[in-house]
Amino acid sequence: MTPGKREIVSCAKSIVRTCNLNSGDGVAILGGVHTMDLLEEIALECYKKGSTPTIVVTSDKYLQRVFREIPARTLATVPKQLIGMLKACDMMIAVEEHDDSSIAERFPRDKLEARQKANHPIGKLLNHPTKGKKWLFAGWPTRKTAKKFGVSFSEFSEIIIGGISVSPDRLMKIGKQMSRKFADASWIHVWDSKGTDFRVKVDDRMANIDDGIISQEDYDAGDRGANLPAGELFFAPHETVGEGTLFCPITKDRLSGKIVKDVMLEFKDGALLLDRVTASENLDALLSSFEQCQRVDRIKFKTVRTKNLAELGIGFNPKIKKAIGYILTDEKVMGTVHVAFGLNKSFGGKSESTMHWDFVSAPGVSIEVTRSDGKIVPVMSKGRLI
Image (cartoon, rainbow, N blue to C red; front, side):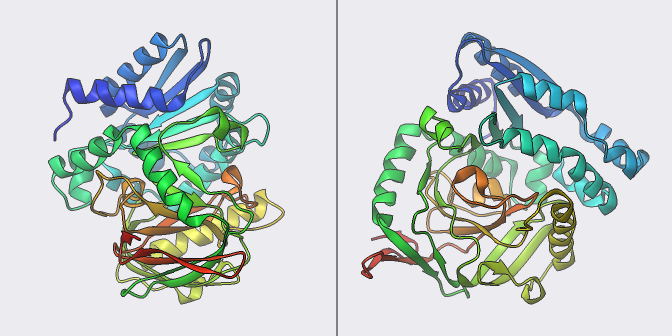
């Protein structure tokens, strides 16, 4: 599938439907210049809802020059004009920024860290407990990024556009069916044949259904963000409890965008044991990103939770069947789970952090739930719901 006019319009409608806009809402729309046709269709759909959109674009060429020519001390300056716009708006829509996501691999680490510090107030503003804004991040396929992930452009388009095409009603139906299996869950145990074997504690933590709609109920509960494609059931597990291992076949470095392969993670008392992490490719990038985020977290937060458990998610988008390293879609594959570390305060947890990195298991996991009465209930066997 190569996105043409029809696919672009359809995706724009899905994106705006996710936002659940009201008449008069101000909407900031951000993206790369290569997505301009989509950004314009999104803006037109916003207008049709009675909202007022503003489009902000950038380009790979511009970003390459910024990270090459501008000193870190300048990049660390908070963009007050963007903060002002986001304070004034009700919704932020961001579409995949890079035409070629591999360009970030060459950005200097000190400048990435500087930009991270500068953007911290944006995250704080979006996730404010009472004045937070609704936000949406949408993926978009490009030929250069498809090449980075080792798939054809047609296949990459099918994963993203096909995933976005699944209706919220269908996703909610699947999500509700799945969530019933986690009723009264105290502990969740996950294992597979690849080395994944862990337990996390989830009692008193809500099960969130990612159906592709930011409902009023979601907003009131503090869960104001969404991703497209959608399709996962996720929890904010207890951050300082839980232990075990997770094998992640492929992921993308949280900051540099480098592909990291065959990652084995171990955590204890809810904390990632960074010195025990292994990977067959780009382990240094993974370690650098955790260390970098930890440095920023020490400055920004009283309690540092960079390496603590943040999320346990189970994918269920019926159109996404293959993990390629693109975390946005990998975490929606049925038969996989993902564990994230860092931020989870926006969806029922207690941790603040500049880090939120999801590590997706291989397909074919088994899951069982221990309920509060001690009863053990099987939920999934080798990737299939029971």
